[in-house]
Amino acid sequence: MFEMVVGTIRHMPGPFSDKVNLVAERTQGVVLFELRVDGDRRLQRIAALAYPTGGLGLMALDKLGQAVICHFAGHAFDDFTQPLVRWSLLTMAEQASGDCLGATLLLVEALRCEGHFLCQPC
Image 1 (cartoon, one colour):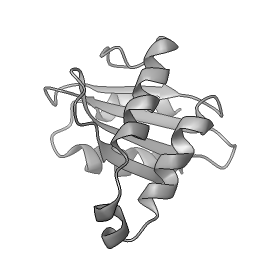
Image 2 (image 1 turned 120 degrees about the vertical axis):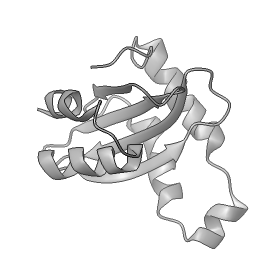
Image 3 (image 1 turned 90 degrees about the vertical axis):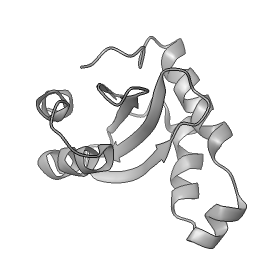
Image 4 (image 1 turned 120 degrees about the horizontal axis):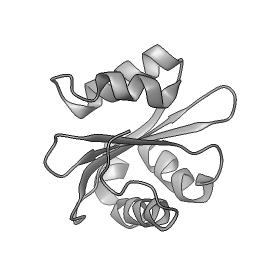
């Protein structure tokens, strides 16, 4: 269901955050985080959605802003997503004094090592 909904919205105009929220609404997911991926050659944004069944949907926007890439991960990447979830729950002041770039890049690399997020749309 997640990948099908992402496939229907990926070419819609509008910001990535709007697409993430629309996918969450249509699939009864909860947005855990939506972050910039600074320093990556292929991606500019990544988001995670949680589902009541325990699944985790990951979405990314390619560097050109043209392709939305997705993967339904279950719990396979929890060790990489939990620091980002914790960071996104901080206040703006706390976020400004901290950094989540390292954890974001670790998640992206973990996904790539498993063959995901190689910049091919769902």
